[in-house]
Image (tube, rainbow, N blue to C red; front, side):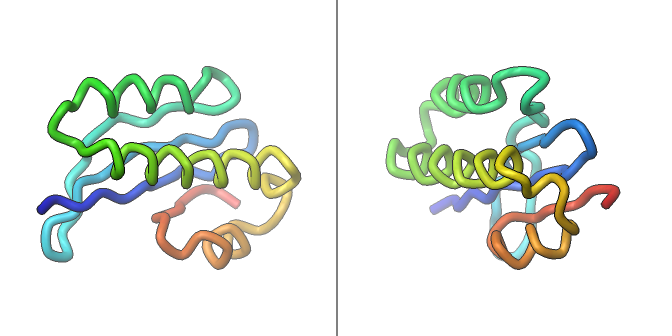
Length: 99
């Protein structure tokens, strides 16, 4: 059974979110990055996940809920905090960036 995981790029003016498929301990990109707030990353991610009909509704909902939490954290001041704090807050999300 495939598992999925979010990854994010923590940028100065944007938050980029993508999904990887996880098999064993290996990650493979499943989607490209969607940028918030430049675009409506959540809606784009939702549409992309819905287009992959082999992803269960439960998995889609879990990914979208977690993406919502990350977006809310970023826009409510998290973007001005050290990236290490975001990594500690969201240990299940692979977060990289330039801060």
